[in-house]
Image 1 (cartoon, rainbow, N blue to C red):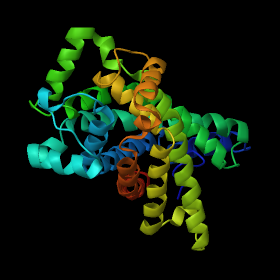
Image 2: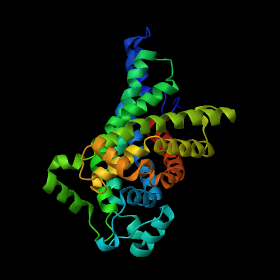
Image 3: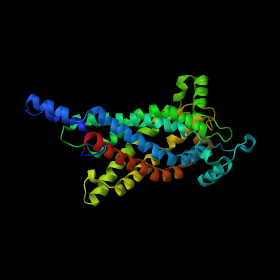
Image 4: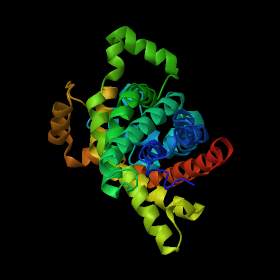
Length: 334
């Protein structure tokens, strides 16, 4: 079995073979026996995609609540606009379900579902690239440390931000709609028609500010917690059981949202155009929120988001480990 899902990459086998005095025919035989890098990448991407889809359907209703609370204007007569004012996360959840049904809680869900494949692909490709860079410094036989893995997570945030910005822009605009039901395609077409293709990347700076520290905490916390709980059970990282991945995934998800949540609140305002005071830049919108609504405006919906992150990320990481191990056995013979 491999050393770790996030640890020493399999690609270092090339260097280990090259550093030996093996006969050329032996090297050729080793190359043929070793699984292809593309096949390994395929298993990582597919595992991550399945895990992301599982987590998305569990967490999405709570994400809708989060966005509606983040973008709810203060001091405006929402009734005159045909909208409902929410007192808190529970009130938002109940009123949304009562007024719009289950479909109201899943408005815009297809946008992140479509984006889950690209998001996970970019995330794991960038994460893997970061691991290879650090592995080149460490040497072929020294495993990556937790700080190095966390930095690889930060690097992956660059790739995921590029994919997530248009996905979340469409998602947020659909989620705040309390009246008509719009489609993902129609919303995307409207954005492009109004602002061009570049309009789909409105809010990129806010997404980047969330994803880089968020992914650092996500990957770092998961690996640190998993190593801790498995060591307490007297087993190796590779022998992690379902109970270990559940605990570690839950902790990782909560840390992902606890750290960069203010950036996500600003991003939601920018992408929906609600409560921005007419400002468009990250700094200007943040200053407007602080001056008009106080520091609490940056943490609206934070409690429900951090709480929902525990079960959804427990599912995400457990699904990833389960699917990854299955594919590795079937496709790679590990």
